[in-house]
Length: 69
Image 1 (cartoon, rainbow, N blue to C red):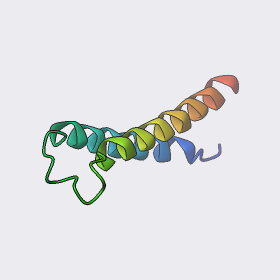
Image 2: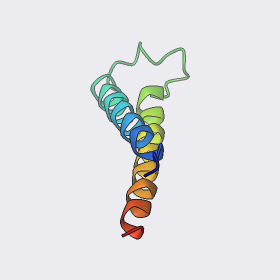
Image 3: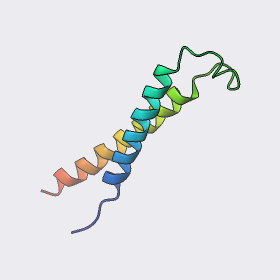
């Protein structure tokens, strides 16, 4: 019985990515907040990147779990 590190990493990145994406969506209309980043909603885009990375890690963890049986 081995420890598959992809499962907790995928869960962590998916959760943090979802929270950051929601925060980016909620604060998206605040133009003063994103002046320093050239009006780019950094929270939204990095939240999506983190969420997609976490989803890919979860997919591979679940794929390896079901392929063993």
